[in-house]
Length: 280
Image 1 (cartoon, rainbow, N blue to C red):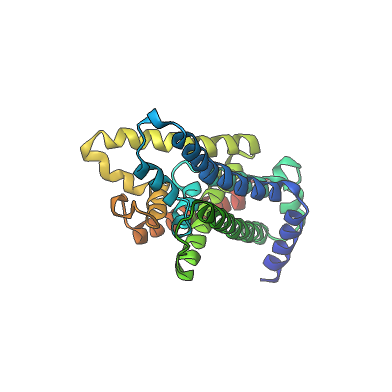
Image 2: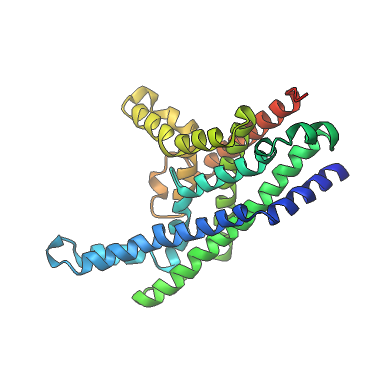
């Protein structure tokens, strides 16, 4: 246990001194503010000024309602749903932390002269978990701040979700980012190339799964296979916080179990490959 603690402290020190780690967090918050809230504000502004656009006042009101404090959890978590950019940020983080020694060509030295491989890798995983917890808190805080400002600007309801729901939303963001960060860690461990791992991870999260699911939905006998994909379960878990809860492909409990199972699988593959690989 002391070896794991020492490795975690070392990884956390390296993370704290790495600008790229914290730039990623700032990018995530900026994307939430711009793409989740800014896009809707821009759409409201443009559509409200076009009387001939065929947009009714009720449509504008519905768009504004998505920005109010009472809906900020579902709006913010949209960044982690399906092909959400929050997932891409998590993949990059997992690759950066687990691939740092590959990029610096220090993997052989770390695995032969330092603590055990198990302690080293678990220390990295704990450091990633802590960083992602900070990301999740920052994401929820950014969404809350944006909703507070826009809700006041549009004269909307000032009702906020309960503290329990806010905590659950933060844990949901943490779990989803943890899943994709573990996927990034697995890929960089398998390929030992950070660029390849980032490319494959982002292409899968953004395009491949969506393409596969669109094909499966066209075949009625294969439709249920959608329930076993990580992206689909992530979307279902996010949808449980908003008006789409009734149409989610699975319930939040099943989605959570599937996501945790994939996270454990990704971590187990990464640890197993790293443990057995000959680096001498």
